[in-house]
Image 1: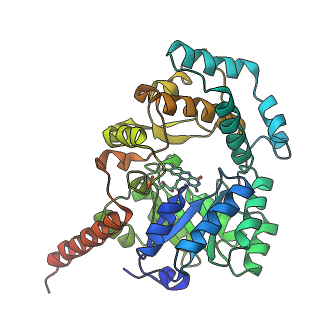
Image 2 (image 1 turned 180 degrees about the horizontal axis):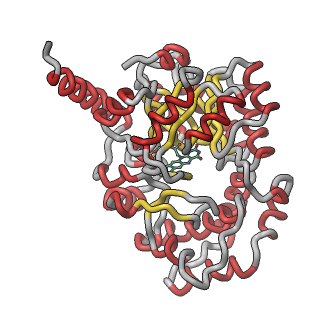
Length: 375
Ligand SMILES: Cc1cc2nc3c(=O)[nH]c(=O)nc-3n(C[C@H](O)[C@H](O)[C@H](O)COP(=O)(O)O)c2cc1C
């Protein structure tokens, strides 16, 4: 399974794990894969604390950091303070969310807790602009075990490319169409994550099975391609490598692990969710995110709902409501980003068990293929 990209990054398995949870990043990396911390919801101070912890636990191995560098966002939000950002959310939008939760009987957060959560959300969401991402990258560069930086929602701008190259960091970018890959290549990106519509999180419309060969072709060997979206089993890894990818990039499969950031209530909803209930909606960030369908996600789709706010404002509004729903344990209102493979995961396992199972299933898939050509 070891591909040239594994050799370049110093990992044993071409299994890349995207996670916002440092425990997952460490567990995957220690198991031979390559953990990538999703940093976009952290303030620089929070990220510094997370990376320091990962450095201490990852036994000298390398890992990655993922930031969101959106090409479309609210430019006024770029330099806004936390207070300004809150003030930019229109009253009508707040009222809509509040009425919805009040009608459903979801209590408000107690005052101290509300302020703390709002502050954390606003500080974190403030990182979802190019300037915010630059601040996070500066933090990542202070940690020599960070070997790869990946940008989502756009190519890294030239100054960021130059900075990363100077530090010999492997530069990756997410892509949902072959055109994105061409743009990334022109910018000098070396690892392109071809993420199909099946994926959890911000996602496009093209399926992984169709996208990966298109991106491999567009890259023509000038960049390594990772396949993302709809991968939770070893047979799917075999398929991705057969399509020309140098590895797989998974997000949803880690959410059900013991190491994941989801609490027991959230995990239960996750284990019960069917594939068809992982839908693409804009309620969470203002951009299309594949997430668990709920009454909250659907309310924003109804006639009369306010228009979605631009990034990062919709995310600030949504996340406070989400914190209320989680605290109240209200399953029917719970939406969290998850890909279609959510319907294949029904119980908690450890990261190590997931990776072991993936390897066994991969070998079984390869044997099945070899049996087709016994000569
Ligand atoms: C909870 C969650 C949050 C995500 N947030 C981000 C993000 O901040 N940046 C990013 O590049 N990708 C993000 N993604 C997408 C992942 O990087 C990855 O491409 C995707 O999960 C792969 O498909 P899968 O969900 O089918 O495994 C997220 C995915 C999930 C499930």
